[in-house]
Length: 83
Image (cartoon, rainbow, N blue to C red; front, top):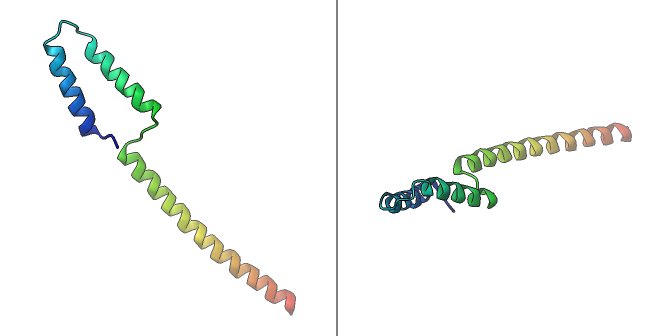
């Protein structure tokens, strides 16, 4: 999706336009507008994505371990009830 290189390129092009323009606050306004638009799109950084993916992997592993333990306990209870 969008990354910091893409944003930097856009920012640099806007900066070039501003240097040739008398409007001083235009850069700040455009940057704020872009950040606001990207925030509304609920974009996250790659770093945030990777962190959440790792958390999800760990959670899945723990869930699998718990399911195995539960199955073993249920088998043990079933075996004790049959005796």
